[in-house]
Length: 389
Ligand code: PLP
Image (cartoon, rainbow, N blue to C red; front, top):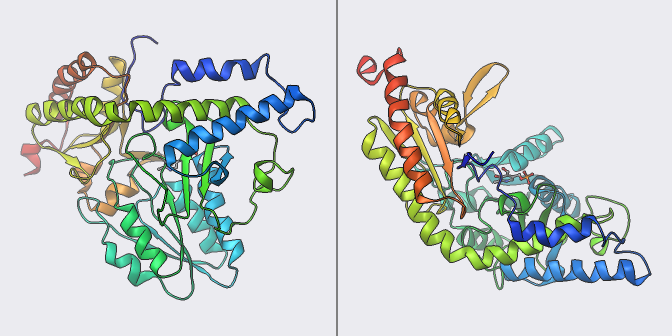
């Protein structure tokens, strides 16, 4: 496993050593239930409070605005369905075509239950037409949900401006910030954002812990009924090790934010430039001027992304493709399709997503290996660049 070159950090991240160290006692000695009356449990409740403060510090919000959940998907579901239950007379949701399935599939399920969903499209660079958001909101609209940063291309939306437009129309605004938190600075103090989702495993905490930020005064229905945990807003005995891990990961994210936006970004740029300058017929997908510092999504025309991934995998290189293998057929991703990326290029798209654990040696290794892979696959392809022209 040590030989793995891991460039798939938008899928999940390595748990930071400091995070493991922080959470371990809660799997062994400190197993008390935070709801217990005795101090053995009470001490754990105090540690959860500290973790809540660490998360709030990263987001620039109040600790009581933080609800711990099990993952980003639960946070998104809670934000959307919890809002709708508070305004049952309103039956419309405004969102975008490039959201993660945690939002899109939720909205499509609501459509089956009589809601109307308005999905705003993007341009060839993956940018939103901001004006469309205002146009689509009407008196029947309960909420708008727009992601902060796209998981596939890294495109960052001007979320504060979008939130302002939505709030000016008196509508609740949620953002899925699962890919943004920890990678770009954000500050919810005085922000128009009502609800925001994040996920631990995208920022070097383990899987199974998420957060929903709920701005003070925002009305949201209880999604998980049960005990009084999370101030009665989400029942269920707390995932204490996960919560402690989340707090520590947020503390570390603050510490490493500058590095993410300088060293990691420089590595990403080196990788991208190295590939683009050595391979023909390839281009970057997404808004290169407004992008997460760790992500590059590159389309290689006329070859299959899966073939590239398999060959990279032989060298221990982990990345992702822009296709999802569904029922035996390789469908290009909904994000690339929404952007209008040509079929021949959408099929050959690869996402590299870096982290603070990557090195320049790894980047150079990937560049060195991928160039002959691309050349070889093009030789084998019935749709080589030349043949297709
Ligand atoms: N939203 C975005 C943008 C994501 O990238 C992901 C995970 O890939 C999720 C939501 C879902 O998060 P989780 O895996 O914690 O459920």
